[in-house]
Length: 225
Image (tube, rainbow, N blue to C red; front, top):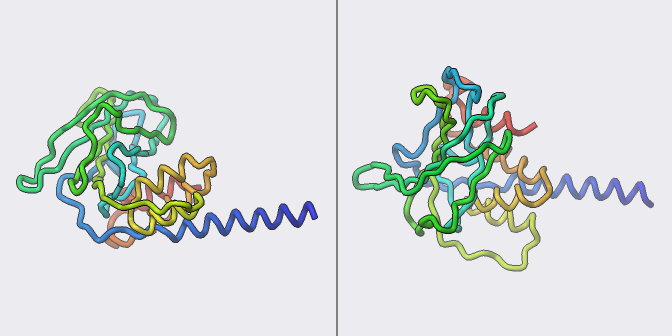
C-alpha cells in the first residue's frame, strides 16, 4: 500500500501542475508604447548579462493588488546593485512619469520586490511600468528590463484550494497575482508551470524571424528547467 500511495501522490502532483500549466489566458489589451523594453541579446560589459521580467511583455500584465510583487531573473555571475522604478503611463502624451525609485541588493538568480506600503499604490484602470536596472557603472551598457502592469477590479473566488485559485487568476489574465501565489506556495513546480505557459503565450506574438536571444519566450524558457 505504501508504494501505491506514493505512486498515486506522484500522479496527483503531476496532474495538479499540468492543470496550472494550461491556465494562463493572456488579456487582449495592447501593450502601450514605452512601457516595455530590455537589453536581451545585446552585448554588455557588466558581470550581469541580462535581467528578464517573469511577466508578460507582449501582453498587458494584470493585478488586483495596489502593492503587487514583481519577479525577475538575472543571468551572469555578478552581484551588482539593482535599481527598481515604478512609473505611470500617461496615455495623452505617451510618456512615463517616475513615481518611485529605490536601490536593491540582488537575492539570487530570481529576485522579487513588493511595492512598499508607504509608496503610492496602483489605481484601478491606470497603466504603469516597472523597471529594473543592473547598475554596472556604465549607463549605456547597464542591463535593464521594463514591463507594463495594470490594476483591475476582479472579485476573488472564495473557498478555492491553492491550485484552483492560481488557475482562476491565470484564466482571467491576472498574471502577477497568480505568479506570486505560485512562487510562495512552497511547490516550485507551480511557478515553473506558469512560466512555461507564459513562454508559450509570448512566442505566439513574436515575429517568426526574430533572433532567439531577443525572444522573451526564449529567456523565460531558460528559467524553466
